[in-house]
Length: 137
Image 1 (cartoon, rainbow, N blue to C red):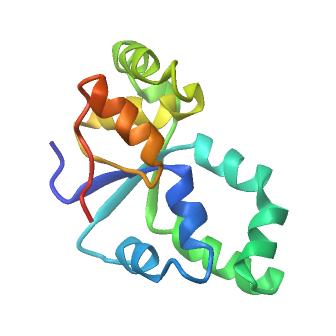
Image 2: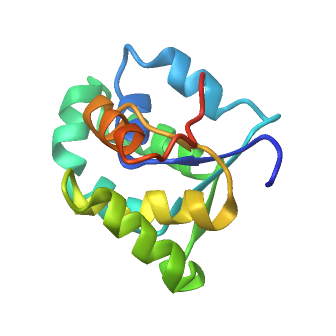
């Protein structure tokens, strides 16, 4: 287990980009913590870019400045570096709730570090399936 390391999922980064997410944002900028995420996160952010800019209430330039600062704090891991066994376990855990979360769960399993998610439905589902490796902020 990598101490002080955490896998962050897309909804956490979404939350950090909106005005009322200062606690999440503060934790993401805490230099005593190391953050990891699959490369997939960048695709998700850009897919929802316009909605995020509008929700952030920031001008586009300020939004991208914050976004770049946030992603500068995160270590991106190509999914190919996550073992097939971890990916299969993660898929089995996620398939009934949201298969798009599989890469995040797989990375958490592979690195043996907690997952930080704000998705209550996902968290509840994973706990019911026996996955309890969550970051408690």
